[in-house]
Length: 258
Ligand code: NDP
Image (cartoon, rainbow, N blue to C red):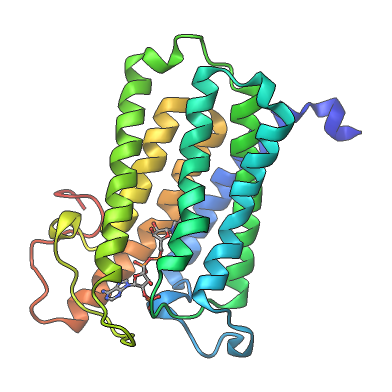
């Protein structure tokens, strides 16, 4: 009842604002503590309940795709071209992240259950606010897709998507079958930064935010930066410490800057 009274649109905006605050909390937490999946997988944390990487990635990312499908099913008739572009950016990314990426992982470490559950919660919460807001409520002008910010946003999103997928494929190909260790990645954006895949991901969501210029999209871009920024810096430190021959001019996350 209170849901109906407040109006779904206002609730989604409120949820987005909460996401920004939680994002700042996540950023602060990750500066003290490393998310225990991948190379920081910590046997001490609930190891008996650890989840296979492939299974974890599939199930934890799936809710975003399911919420996108639900929004389309329920409110598809309200889609306009500008809304459809926002929708397809989000749904397209999550199609690749849940239906393709998990099945390409090889030798990935396990995921601790608390991280699996937080990713699952995030993808449900974020899936709901992104999909429902952009399919049903976003107040785009009919010419929205043609304005210069929208066009730059689309280009940044697509560039980020390509960098993210390309960089993840470089990482995947560093290992021979059965290997589990870490090597220095070369090629593509790895020539400039240690966390090229995260750079791509962040670029995608900032492009999306520039296109949409809505609370949910801006919140998602900021959250991604808060979540992946500290992890990028941990990866960079890990490489510098482990490899004496690590390229000296390689930055952490943003080519030439950071
Ligand atoms: P990582 O870069 O930590 O790892 C990606 C994969 O590559 C893992 O399978 C990892 O193996 C392997 N790998 C990484 N570095 C090396 C290396 N030097 N040598 C050999 N193998 C390596 O990325 P994440 O797992 O954190 O993230 C995966 C994807 O999900 C990325 O595209 C990221 O952008 C996205 N993501 C998005 C988030 C968001 O907030 N939007 C949050 C988290 C991730 P292993 O598992 O054994 O370490």
